[in-house]
Amino acid sequence: MHVTRQITAPFTGEQIAELPISDGDHVRAAHEKARQAQASWAALPVAERARPFLRLHDEILNRRDEILDIVQNETGKARKHAFEEVLDVAGCALHYARRAARLLAPKSRKGIFPVATQVTELRQPKGVVALITPWNYPLSLGVTDAVPALLAGNALVHKPDTQTALSTLWTVDLLAELGMPREIWQVVLGEPADIGDALLDGADYVAFTGSTRGGRKIAEEAAKRLIGCSLELGGKNPMIVLDDADLDVAAHGAVRACFTNAGQLCLSIERLYVHESRFDDFARRFAKQTKNLKLGAGFDWSVQMGSLTSRRQLDTVSAHVDDAIVKGATLLAGGRARPDLGPFFYEPTILTGVSEKMEMCANETFGPVVALYPFTSDEHAVALANDTVYGLNASVWTRDLARGRSVAARLKAGTVNINEGYASAYASYDAPMGGMKSSGLGRRHGAEGLLRYTEAQTVASQSTLLGFEAPFGLGNDTWAEFMATALKTMRRLRLK
Image (cartoon, rainbow, N blue to C red; front, side):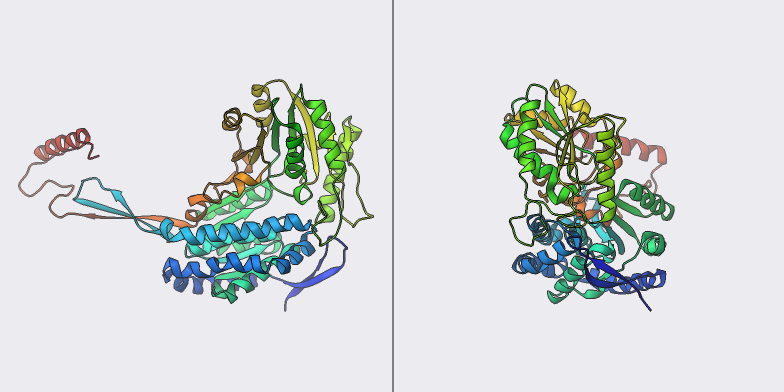
């Protein structure tokens, strides 16, 4: 008999659903169902596997109001921020559905002997993938990591965060309507301490998005079983405003970069560096725009920032801001909870004078809070931005794109956006996205975002007329001389 958990709306605290919670036996049964379904799914031509995901592009856009209501109800985010999730799912699904056949097609590779050795690289599915996704972008992160795994011929056992599982369940139902075999995408719910072992024990690969602490545990367990994993983890992301930037544009961009989804975005900016000659002017413009943001619990498009998703996030944000103020930071905007709007609302907050003695200086807040710092030169800005254990995302603002690219190339971050906070790099699905340093392993998006779910297999056929042993009657010394001469000749002729 299933234990259940009540899901409440962050906007109001009222119950919106009651979901069954899995135990270890449920997870093992899900793995068995997934494994049984995977073989027949992988045997289908890639073009046939792609059909439901091609259809998903239009269907999720057509039914956007339905899924937007679900995402807002379970996360508390503003509608325009929920719409970014819908756009992400549509765009990513279309990208991989159109390209999977080419990415997975057998590739001819050069053999040791031209003509005599014929080599083909194949891509075989891993088997069953354990997918673990967080609460902050449940539709986006759940679906866009699932689609390439399924297109590669795998089955899934997916553990979304229980608070935000409704969007995943809705999508599985939709894809089943569009022709996807339901058995290949199994969903289980529960806490890592209760079902984590069973989830990983049955997997051939693990894809995880979440905290750096959680990612380290996943990596350790995957290493014990010698299976692969990809990890998209935390960030303390910097934004750099160079001395030639348009300050109104940069300030508007900073509002979006820092306060989208109330700052509960792994790519969100939490450290903002402004050239000292423009610092006061920028701070004034940024604070003014931030104070004018419309907060609310509405399902209409006028709300500019919604709620935090949980009491835990509210407590973390409040603790970081209070600690900074007590230790000498200056508040330019925000700095307080808003229970009048809903149980987990917190104002978008800007601080200056944040130092290393403050909790929020180096640690990820994951809320609508940003610290402003001055810098003196491009080199100084790069050094400050790189002074972190994280390396997920960064942003550079300038009128000179060549200068911006030069600064970007020196930043230790997996994605860098010029004159945008996060979306231009993230939404470029043909390019890889992921973290350096403690921000993760592997990449989503790009070719790697699909091929990570495969095993590379090399198949080489060798002519019986020319092999690796001396032909009958030829001495080994003569054969060695022939081989050495042949290899040197092939190098000169660029046959190798």
